[in-house]
Amino acid sequence: MVDSATRIWTAALVIIGDEILSGRTQDANLSYLGRWLNLQGVRLKEARVVPDDAQMIGNAVKACLAAHDYVFTTGGIGPTHDDITVDAVAAALDLPVIYHPEALAQLEHWYKGELTEARRRMARVPQGADLLPNPETGAPGIRLGRLFLMAGVPSITQGMLRGLDGTLAGGKPVETLAIGAWTPESRVADMLSDLQRANQDVQIGSYPFWREGRGGANFVLRAVDKEKLRTVRDMLLAQLREAGIDAVEGEI
Amino acid sequence: MVDSATRIWTAALVIIGDEILSGRTQDANLSYLGRWLNLQGVRLKEARVVPDDAQMIGNAVKACLAAHDYVFTTGGIGPTHDDITVDAVAAALDLPVIYHPEALAQLEHWYKGELTEARRRMARVPQGADLLPNPETGAPGIRLGRLFLMAGVPSITQGMLRGLDGTLAGGKPVETLAIGAWTPESRVADMLSDLQRANQDVQIGSYPFWREGRGGANFVLRAVDKEKLRTVRDMLLAQLREAGIDAVEGEI
Picture 1 (cartoon, rainbow over the protein chains, first blue to last red):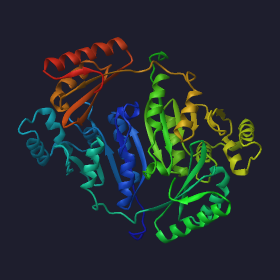
Picture 2 (picture 1 turned 180 degrees about the vertical axis):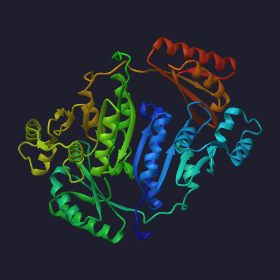
Picture 3 (picture 1 turned 180 degrees about the horizontal axis):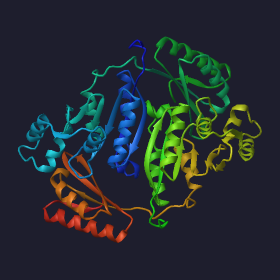
Picture 4 (picture 1 turned 45 degrees about the vertical axis):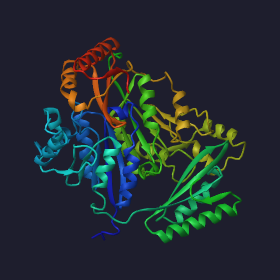
């Protein structure tokens, strides 16, 4: 048995929408969810972007459910014909779609009695689902066990996630420390590689940049063990400075 | 046989990097590639974001190659230990990794003779690969038939794509027209749905927004046939105005 504190909990995100793939809309939910999940002790391990296509949505959700503890989707839960997430997911999971009574009541209240057929669509959920409160508009998100169907509009997505704060089972969050250095990463690749090999429990990433005509790199260290993380950060900082490289704590 | 002008050419993008999933880095390549591909007559049909994990990179690339005409990857082709794209792809495709002579020559020139072992890493390619010129730094991208391994830094990625302009076989690009309207999308959902049903060759997307305390929506119409696209746009604009809705050509 794996200790629940050391077990690594993982999640996947399925981003739904033609507008993301066509380049019309820049996704802003992935990076937010990645950071939010880390605070819950869960690692975002993969993401998929799929068009408004029921088969592709269903396949992505099923594959992600099979591989991860939690699956989140964004997009396609509004009132219009191109909002097909609920039907696609229900079909993929062999569940009927029903009107959720509480969602109907919320929408009735939000639209002050003008609950047209199109607006009622937003109360449709796969059978067995619970609601995710939406603090911004009347249309709730949907929770089906470890599957969460959320809105695509970032402020609404974030509101739905706030409602889930602290409610997911997870492990320890990953802590991050960084070093910024004015060096081409290729100059210190061996140093990084040796340090990584000697410290497998700290994950070292190297992210080069060019700025004001100068090349540099940020080295991002991530680990569950804070003490170990600080130790390796200090070792790298010392090694860089010994090599005569201008390096500072934190990204530059 | 499918006529090559009407056949739909599709592509997938595999975004590689822990930093995207952790939320440290906001991906900027997906939307650029989506728009660039459309100009080549190719539709970006799916994207996957995977961590620096050889198995997950390999699986994603293989699955995408099986489903699409072209596959692009971004990230993980630099000189450091966390750059594992070439090895992961070569392993997944059962190819040996070799040093590409021309890449070595380019790197030798770029680093003015200071070609360390770490820098030589950037000349490693799966056997049989060609190079994608990199106008910004000395490290080339890699082309293996219909698979393209590109850098993750957006300015470099875009430079590599410019080198591919007009070289991919594709179909007709999708044209886009839009209408912006000051109405909650739920009010016009039936109108949109009826119009979509009657015009299956024009794809109608509805994207709501809230701005300055007012709700509105942009309706984005996409089709290969320009004439048809304009006709359906004009129909929708007329219907919105008949319903007393403040609507204009173009997104608002």
